Length: 351
Image 1 (tube, helix red, strand yellow):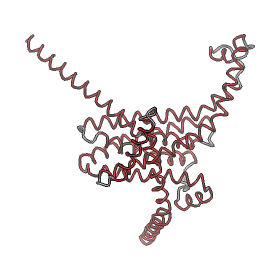
Image 2: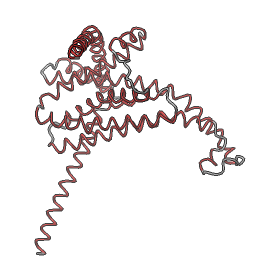
Image 3: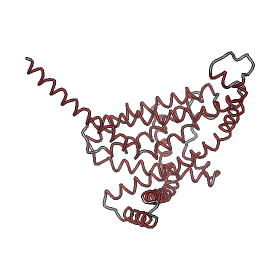
Image 4: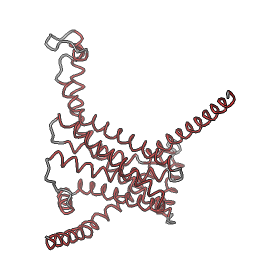
């Protein structure tokens, strides 16, 4: 019995070692997939704060919480099973879906550039596409619903990128990596968004607080400022005013970085997808130019190569997105309107 028990324990230890190695592999794969999805993550974090603009400060965090919960449902309830089913039934479809998602990112990013350069024309385009449509519920529900729909598309791209990264792994490793990436990215994005949207409130509180040390120590707020308060108050007030003044610039910077990331990531996805289908000319040309730049500037090395690759992918994505804007405006939108008209006619006839 004792020998059997020892053998059993030895088997358990062996299985534990295998499980630990597998979990390490899951962590490494999740980190790799998360890095590849960084561009989409940045855009998600840059887009979300606009959905809480105009609401009372007390409603900002609840709104972010609702959007985060919707994002988690998108990833774990809808997209994760769909991704696993796709990997099992039609793995050949992963690359085309990635390319469709990449084209969408190029379109969205290019549309933002178009809006920045030609705001009046962008407003007309947005109205034509129907992005300003409102639901019958309250404004908060409308904003949350709109944010979750946008998140679904970005989450689908994140999960597709993740699945493409672990396409050769076993099904359970794919499921774990998808879950880890989905939960981790949701926490990262919406935790960051919560900090961003409340930063101005924190800055305002610091800028108007004459008793920072007493407040930190939770002492009676009605007393006179202590010596420590008087010494620290100028610093905390100045820091608070700096936060308040910096937030508009930070939000604009996030918007610019998010737009650039969308275009760069989308263009890169399309280029890599074309290479998988045998159209390697563009990818090889970008690689050759990037390698030559890295060789010409050895002090920067890999950084220079990455910058050239990202810039070239972004330029390609910008051109592709610019081509998709009129295609959607004059092709897809009239088609959708026609289909909606036919459906409404059918509904009236059936009534």
